[in-house]
Image: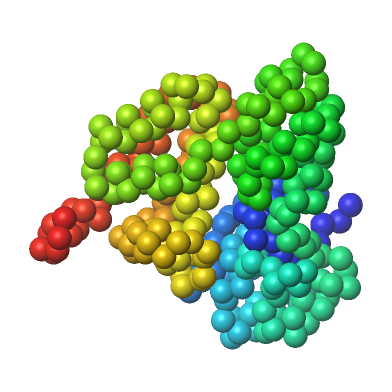
Length: 330
């Protein structure tokens, strides 16, 4: 099957985006390499250069542009002129990640008027999903179980719909954990539903705040004793909670409206400002590295956590040193 010349993905949930894009790559371009850019800041020359490169090795680059709704209209016009022909060496994928307004996809007016959007619409090159509401969460659980040959009983489904948040990364982590419990029975029921546990995001924010303050011993105590000692399957849910917290801080730093108590929002924004977009991007990279190392078996759970904490301590230490050199508050 021929892949699209380019793709628009309209969904506010990063995990649903990730799963869909990886599924499409596996189906249509299994040997493609992925390059990720963010539209919150001016696109670097490295992004534009991918449109000019020749595929000397025959390998396609999946050129993923996150938060594309942030692009200014002139940039969209430049992209529109580049998307007028199929380029074998590059597969541009644009992620529009703003929250939906009811059932209406949040497609910027400047995008909806472009020829490339109209072409994608006519070709079926647009994927849209509003995120996980109750109906979407039910479908997500059922699809996850179907792919693994696991029977989901109604008592499990009812409790899961009540216990799990509308966040695909957290839901996926909890379901993957329960898959081990259902390894022999291939069934999820009321007993397994009792194992569902999503830690409050405030604990993760406290972890990041402790890192920012340089409280190493507090970090280790909070993370290892609070997350891992009582539950050997808590590492991946913890990582996804960190990613969720990073996404919230990114949104706040970019001036987006996030529904939080005023005091909590103020505290998160303060930490986000101290990290900056580069720091938050680095946080994202360190977490994904830890997840990949653990899932591939390269690192044990404890090794992955050890490396993650060491990388984060280094990242958080840089802003503190810069403040000290500039004479600012520590």
